[in-house]
Amino acid sequence: MPIYEFRCNACQQVSSFFVRTVNDPLSPTCPVCGDSSLERCISRFAVHKTTKSVWEESGEPTMFPKDRDYYKDPRNIGRYTEKRLKDLGIDMDSEEYRDTFAGVKDTIAAAREGELPKTLKDQL
Image (cartoon, rainbow, N blue to C red; front, top):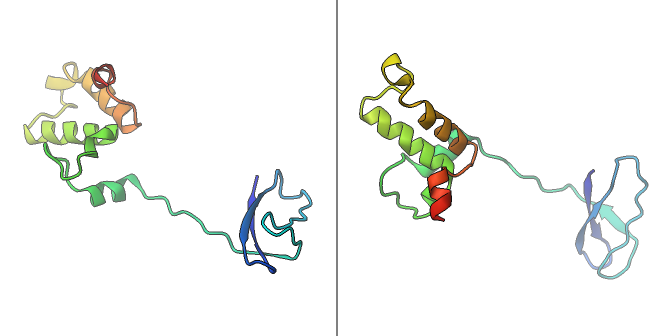
């Protein structure tokens, strides 16, 4: 389901037109002036960032981040939890802690997928 952009030759307005399939016929008219002499434009596109690049830009997880909204993103909660446990010398995958941190690992994995931990959900 592509969206095509056209520029009106009469009023220079750029308009987007949704098409159900690539093979559907398209005879667009300008929604502003009604003219039918439109030229197809090269559409803008979005560049999506990787998780790694987002984390690099947001910096190391800390107890008191500069951005007050930093921990509204549950992925950063998981990041901070993992970092803090590592700082404390706790390896969640070691046999010593595997059973103890099984639930924590599930919560961190859910946070990485964007799900708020249940205790925070209840508070909000």
